[in-house]
Length: 567
Picture (cartoon, helix red, strand yellow):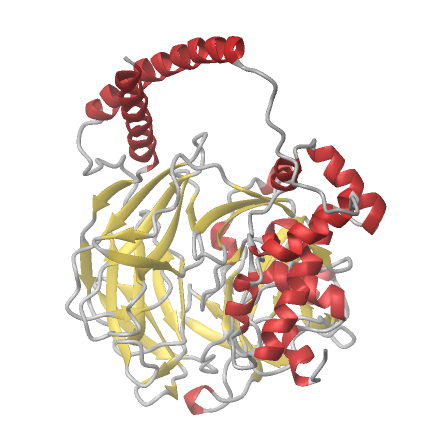
């Protein structure tokens, strides 16, 4: 009888696990790709926007990585080319409330070298550009966002000093044209960024965060900069950080209500394990958005790399995140699929749908924009991953605004599994209740788990130290105070109180001291070992936690510590 019950328990657990996995599965649906007429000029590093109902591309560089001071707008089924004032290769653009577009910065020379001060506006009614003033700091790989009264925040740079500046139109502020500098430098920043996110937190304030560092590496920092105040620390960024991309226009991620003073955004974030999630930011407060299933990281036998800014269609209550095969850069000549993650953020929890395309015979990678019809448009970009061979193809991913008919078919089988799992779970609880009653009757004096004391009767703290050092428990990144308490057969509070009184620190601080010393030993004895391996082998849960604690303990980063030959 007991064997049968055990089998029932196992089957119940497997059924429950299977039903949970089924519930965790994201809906999947195929979408069509429409090939629009090609651009007249192949281009990458350009700006793409939709104003006055027209799709427009501007600037960037063309074949041979040469900047092109041209733009094109799409009308009557074809692209029309016209001149710009400057090329703005890897510059920034922001669609203004006035209906015009501001463009600025960019590389000074071919092949992506240098930075520029130049800015201009685009008037879609006349299809004309007008250079009007210069930035206070020459920039490329920058971002911009309009706030109140036509003012525009600009931040970010590439291989050059970063900082925050603010544009204000004298006609809006009623300042004297002769005395007022259109761009005003606001403040320096200690952490420079390329393509940062700029998120409004109030009518006249914004946060600058995320992005790459100034040389293109991943930027892991909890620090963000406020336009009006001091730098702030965002706890969520200790574990999750915004996905970096090459066209960070956070205005396209807005889900708030400016009239009500609600400045809210969706931001795609990832952790050190590469798992992606969606953060919801409301007036500068960050929290993960509850979703009905985890963000899918695999499909069609390949890993997915998400890379775009969140694109929000407020009319549909959906956000979109673009992805492609994670191995794209290893074999760019191979046909690859596009993936689009759709987030129905108005639902509680938010539902997710993963769209995919058929493999495309040729591939150009670039950040998309949202069309007025609710589809995603990819115009130009790097053909097969090379800046020297930009593409002129224009692709339309038809996600639309209709409800998704997922390919997973009927959910009746999932419901059946859930019902069966529930019945078996009740049987499991009943069995455990009966078993516990019988055990309580048969139980004798509990067996002590306390380790044998040494002949000189060590104190509890001495025994904790001995077990920690001999068994190297600190190398377990999931070590908890309750694990130590179980070894000695005492309450977890006794362990915490002992460490606090004897070592004058918390349990976590106590364990991290061992981990730091172990990491130092690894770096001394194996100087060629990568830092990414050191922190994992030392028992830390994440690289960011390791860097933070190491610097707090030594006053320097691991690389600085190694270079100075510290002991």
